Image 1 (spheres, one colour):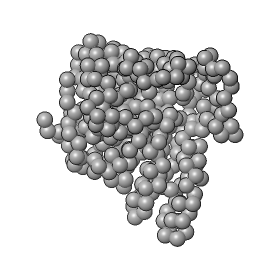
Image 2 (cartoon, helix red, strand yellow):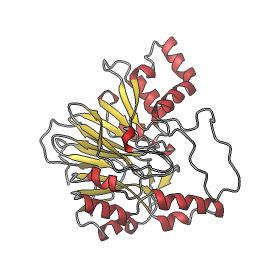
Image 3 (cartoon, one colour):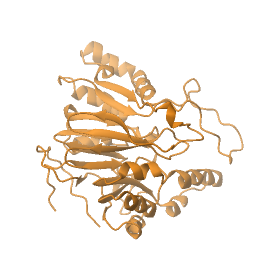
Image 4 (cartoon, helix red, strand yellow):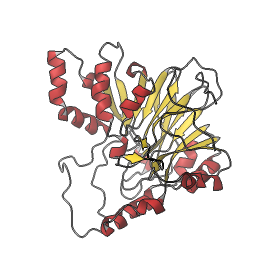
Length: 354
């Protein structure tokens, strides 16, 4: 099936979730979670999982055409390749006359998460002076950590500072929502506009990925169609509200039974599975969300564990009767039906519809 590149589309740069180096059920590596939304030649990156920069390059996406980076939440599997975007990307942008690229995502959590009731002692936090930074703190901290490299290039090669080429913007939550990172992580809310340009309007809602909060899902609306990306979440009403009537929903999926088998430490197994059960969504649950929201096409990604057999993911078919895809890395999935300007060619294959 040929892909109509004149349509807005996503490229699944990476489809695996979790802070691991994953392979699929056939032993082929899957890169970390990262999705490019491509509209009229401009692309928008949602999450920076392992290999995001490399995969964007493989897909033929030019840094000069990057309209923004959107971070759903602060877990490492969604941010680990942000340094390469800031540092390698800045080098590629050196001759590009454009303003700074926004890096949009959560603010500081404000306090450490609650301690697991299974803990037998109190751990020592990392960076106790600033233990829960948001995207602004992350970008500042990364550039500080790479200051030797940055300053060598700024002073010796007269390169532009990455601090001039990227602009972190934390999502401000209205106080009236009553959000609390411990006790009220997903207050009922209408989608909040967080970004707009000539191609897209991006809205966000809080989702349920406790104890990581705030955590967001994003929706990109264009003149031709819409795509909604869940981030990491348990089923919650906000997710259904954001995805209502969307052309394409990219939703996370977890296989709890197979995941539990990889742990040998019983204490870590119990605490980790407590988290996974309350903070993630099974394939069947994702299908139910898509059905409730009236989604036209559901694609499952952020697959955990990614080596699960295909039938673990096709369980979404038990709750969702629309188009279902389980895309590989670098799959291209059009959304909407408009006739926009030609998009750049990409090397990925179309996603198979099941």
